[in-house]
Length: 422
Image (cartoon, rainbow, N blue to C red; front, side):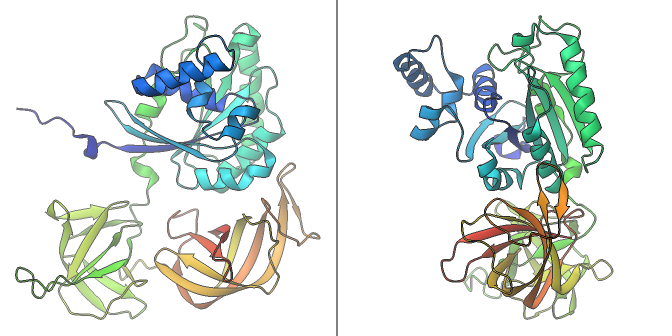
């Protein structure tokens, strides 16, 4: 008898939405959930009731994700809203991010773990400044796949010429960015054209619907399966009757493939050993890869603790104290030059000092501003820091997990910046 794929075994796709205000991001997500039958009956009743109270005809699908009262009153998204749903093929986590300039940090938060970004473009307005800004952030965060959804096609009479013009415009701009895989889909989130069902109004379009793209886009190679990186999160010592001498090292694999019997090296000590077993909640397995969470045991008793990293002898990350970063500043207090911050990288925590600000990026023009060194809320810039101890880092382009950091204010314990290692 053929074993069916369980819910827990299904592949997970994380995607984020981005676009200007009123481009229809929340409506699109509402339409995706509605047409894929992922809305519960009580949510449906509440939607109908709220839409009726607001004097709107039919159901306002945007209310599904805009949960804050101020969001509903203004008809905009302010905070990142996460939604979870599944189809028979895949599980999904959606991050609905704000379109306003002043919420750039919220977009960075929602997009940092995404496999795919949906960029919405209003068919009436074409590629605007905010579209370019979001495309730049998607490129900066190395999101592997981008779906450019040209929305509100119903308001331009489903004209192919409008779609072709915007497609050409975006391609011209994105050629300057590091975007690997771009798909274009003409849609109407309000009417449901090409969202889940194919549109009868745009028979000239021969590509896939948005849902078909989300279900079938290949994301297996998005993770780095070449460089083996296993930061230790916790040492497991049950010291029970059944496991008196068990010593396991648990954490999440941030890159590569580990197999039982592999020769490995532990950083920073440089000691070598072999993997004795790879254990999971469901029992031992022969191999594990990113982004699995596992517990490894080794052939030798070595002093290993949280913050250490298991790697391959001939493939090691750089051990660095002087680090160059692209950062997005997330705090209302400006960054302090020569200021001291706590830095968190994988499972390591250290302190650091800001040595220099190389430049700030003007997100509207993508120009580097080397004269203005003041980095404030929502600014993106390149800085150099010095840490109190070496961190085991990779280039963010090569590994998003070992190439990213956060900076924390030592006094308030607030996260003040997200950074990508260059």
